[in-house]
Amino acid sequence: MACALRLSRLRRFANFVVIALVAFGIGTGLTLHSAVVARAASCYGASCVGLDPNQSGCNNSSAYTVSSAAVGQPSGKIVGWVYEIYSGTCASNWTFSRANSQMMIITVSAENCSDYSCRYGYNYRATSWYNTTYGWSPMVNGLPIARSCADYVVPYSSDAHGCANPV
Image (cartoon, rainbow, N blue to C red; front, side, top):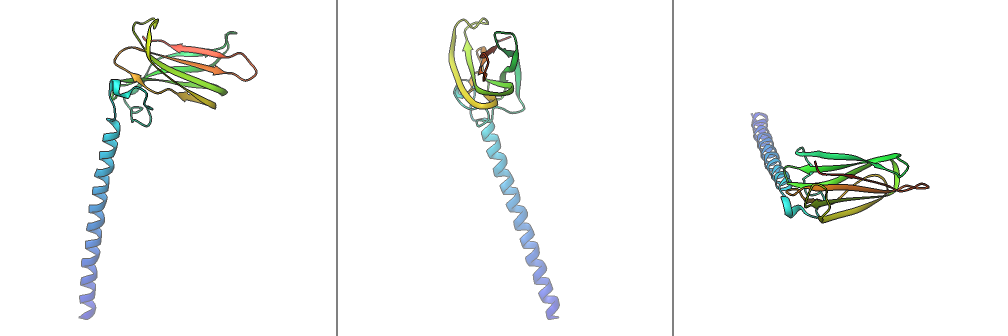
C-alpha cells in the first residue's frame, strides 16, 4: 500500500513537471516570436536611413534585387557584381557587392536620386570592407528611387567600379 501511495505521488509530481515545462516552453516561444516580429518592424522608409539591413531585420524574405551591374576594371575585366536591394517590409534600399576573388578593399554605397539618371543624389551612405569578397552598405530610404555602387581596390592591378542604376 505504501509503495502504491509513493507511486501515485510520483506520478502527480511528474505530471506537474511536464505541465510546467510545456507552459514554460509556450511562454518562451511567444516571447521569442514577439521579439522576431518586433525586429522585423524596427524601421520603415526614412527611419531606416543609415541602419544595417541585417541588424534591423530588413534583409528578410521581402528583400529582392532591383537591379545589378558588373564591377569592372578599365581594361573591361569583370571582377565582381553590385546589387541594388529593396525591402518591401522596411521600404528601404541598400547595396550588396560580391567580388570574384578577395579584394583588398570593397567600398559600397547607396544613395537616393532625384531622377533616374541619378545626376542629383542625396542620403548617400557608404561603408568599406577590408580583405573580403563581399560587403553591403547602410540603408537609404526606399520610397524615392535609389542607386547602388561598388568600388574595389584590386591588388597589383587597376581598381574597379560599377553602379546598379534605378530601373
